[in-house]
Image 1: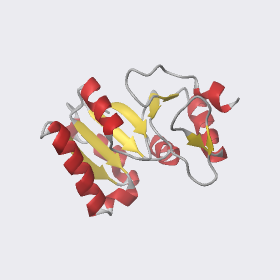
Image 2: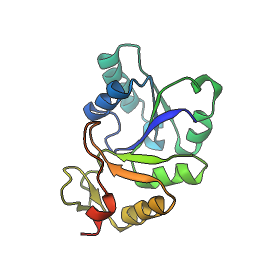
Image 3: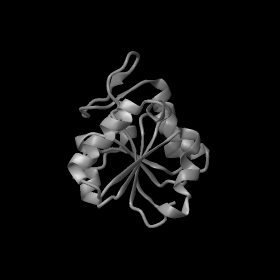
Length: 164
């Protein structure tokens, strides 16, 4: 599968994501999110923001979680430099359990929601027990999970942060 970065960020497409797109010279963003697939207004906003910043050099497509792995395997995407975006660790694990092969997951922002606690030393990482269990599961599968809002941020050992 040709994707370059797999990112979890509950804001999906925003300024930090654009920084990754520029830095890694990406040309396709795949937003794997069931809710956004049904929300034409949200899709339009994401498309407008992306086109405003990158003109036509970056394409955005939307897919349901259950269709994302097969979408990535399509021949038309073999030569693309892809950012795969999901908005939760639960969706990331679903994709991996569906056959997505990854070595690492970039966590952008998982913002404050009811039942989640802020992880010290991170500006935008709030987790609950289920999130922590998913992170531990991913790490046991030899997948690097690192909160990196921006490309020049240092990789952080997330287990040290969540076990404080």
